[in-house]
Length: 253
Image 1 (tube, one colour):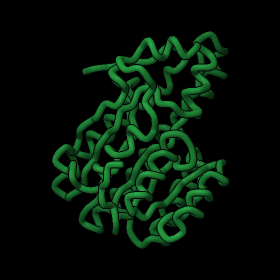
Image 2 (tube, rainbow, N blue to C red; image 1 turned 90 degrees about the horizontal axis):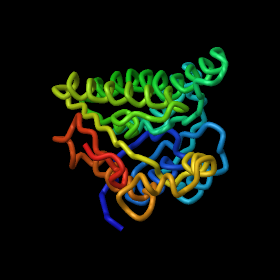
Image 3 (cartoon, rainbow, N blue to C red; image 1 turned 135 degrees about the horizontal axis):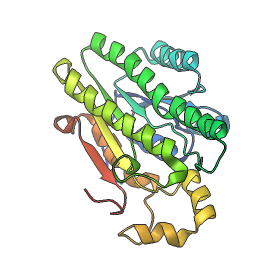
């Protein structure tokens, strides 16, 4: 395992109980980080991390579609740890809404997707900026998607649009606040072997997914974790504003 020293580093990770977030959480804790483990509904998974790392991991519940809960989450994390060094904005939904749906049903999924994938990210960015500006430093890591660059299928228009907005936000933060010692990065995966991807594979078949990539197997959360840890460590600060693709060669820019 690649070793990246994150001792004395406090990280808030949204969506830490499942999928990519769970893989990131396990790695960051293994590297010595103090971690705010955010979850919405999977309390059991979040608590397993706390039991395994009782001195460095603390679980916090919040429904990110509710702006009051987003604000409360940030305040509770700062209240417990006293500071945050990095905010990793990983939580997101991947909800299908084909244009064949009734317009109101289609719009409902659009709004739900945006509330979690973009609105909550924007609000968390504002809260993080306020905190980092007071502290004199800080880092954001945004979990984007190749969908922001190559587009998505018609069932996932909201998802692609939300990740495009997230990517532009991250770049704007990097440009606007670098002089204040605030850095911002985007990690842009393709299909990653998670529960979210498994649902798509059940619908469309694994062969379709594997045919899109250049490698022989899908990316796993553990393939993203060292990169994210490196961003949190400060070793990649001069790559602020960058988007790093980790998609098994399925979209090469």
